[in-house]
Length: 223
Image (cartoon, rainbow, N blue to C red; front, side, top):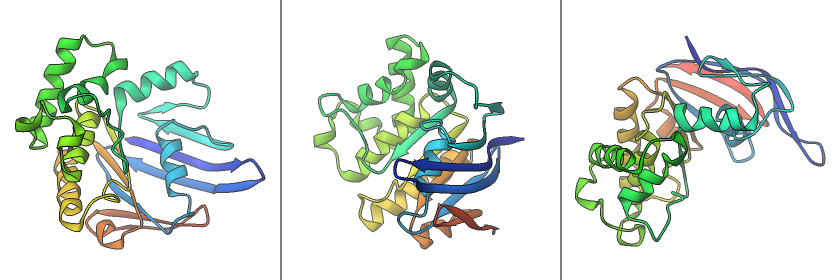
C-alpha cells in the first residue's frame, strides 16, 4: 500500500522558478527512502509537498492513502497532526520549555490532554535515550541531544510517516551517525521514513535511494 505518492507533480514559484518538474514517485508503507541531490535540486520542495506543507502547482498528491488535492487547510493540518512527524535541520525547539514540554507541545493539535501528551512525551524521550534529560531546556543540551528531542517530538504521536530534512546538517559526524542510526531503528517499527540529504554516505545506509537534480528525479535505486 502506498504511504506517499506524487503523480506528475510540478511546483513553480514567483518569477517562473520551477522547483519541481513533472515528478512521479510511489513510496510504499514501511519504506525507508533517502532523497539525495545537490542544493537546488528540489529535494526540500518535494518533502514539503509530501508533508502537505505546500500544495503543488500541478499533479496529484496522495498521503496516507488520501488524495489531498481537494483537502482544506484545516483537513491538511489534521492529517499532519495525526499522521506525519517532521524532523528539521534546525531543531525548532522552544528555548523556554523543557525537553518534556517541547515534545508535548508537538502534540498540541492532536486534541489530547496535557497529561496524556506529557506521558507520551516521556515515553518518546526514553525511546531516544533522553529519559535523564526531560527537565533540561535546549540551552542545556548538546546539538545531538537537541536533535533527539526533535525526533522524540516527531514520534511521540505515533505517526505513520516520518519526514526528515537534513537532520544531521548542524551536527558533528559522530552525532550525525547516531541520529541516522536512531531514525533507522525507529522506522524499523513500521513507520515510513523519507530523509533528505546531500550526503551520499548517509544515503548509502538506506535500502532505497532517490536521486534528484534540477527539480527532477533522475534515479531510483534499491539496495
